[in-house]
Image (cartoon, rainbow, N blue to C red):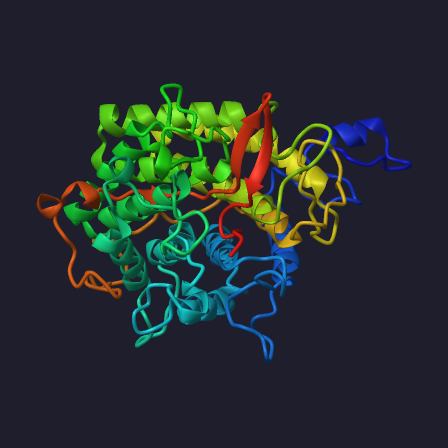
Length: 473
């Protein structure tokens, strides 16, 4: 299976000897060679950046072409893409795209508030949209991503996002707490409280707590994770569902499962376990979530976005074409944060999954969406930047399986972190509230993405709304 093309004139013995080297019409990768894996990642990264034109005259810095109808991509996806490039640098050491990523994050943070709430996007802004940019800024702080003196601080950007989402005007008592998908009443989806919005807030709180050692962040994170579980968005078998509607007290749970929701939740739980070493509170959920996620999304060892990537047809939209990469990046973090609990099953899965990824990529780094068909699928109709992002994440994170690869740990302010931050960053609140000041309506959730609002009719999902960032205004 490792050879995806027939190579004329090569003896079977030589083919067997080269069993970890892929064929010429696909991206050539020797999985026993760290340098070869990095070269493959570099090829895919070059392909991915070709979809970005924000550094060209007359274009908007930091975003992919869009939003519709101007182009296929919504604002949030560019935030996720820059996080993918930051991880690419962290794992491979290639700084080719660092300047573009830095320029994009600084510009879209919208100084001086730096809360990623630019007037260009505020009218249609979801908590998840803002959250994805905040998570990329947080990653930049954790990996000491370069930033020139005098420029906005990565940690400050992440704190600004957290503070605006922890503010009173983002929370209410409906469904017992939790963030709404949308920020403003006028936006479609305001009556939906979903996993993605709350997972992003939980994830960001967990990582801020680890970086700063400020218990206010960890209190928020724990409260939010408990809300996601208590409302039923995570069931007893560790399935993670999409959300519910306020008019139904969030009991009409949309049980579609997206890899992006699992990604953001798992990473946050892994961070909390790393910080607390609490086996019951965080270790048990982490192992349960990882085991179920690997079982569900990697049914034969290769990742499938099961809600839309059907055997006979592909229903995934532009947003969803990028989801696989978020799960791989988060699983890699979990393996590094909690190696004794989840590293082995994650490494095993990465080693089977990468074969499908390589099969899907051409020699120039053009990668298909389906990783389980043994070839490039030719899918270019739904925002190919998303599937390139996922392929780049697959190659970058695969380096955690290589013993000779040197991967620096995520830093904190006490272990070499250079971002100093500002606990009062953002438009509001002026200061962080302590948990002792919280009322019921302050129990925040942090969200993970919502791709569709789905209903079940005769056992079949019909997609009624499009997902993170994709909403009809």
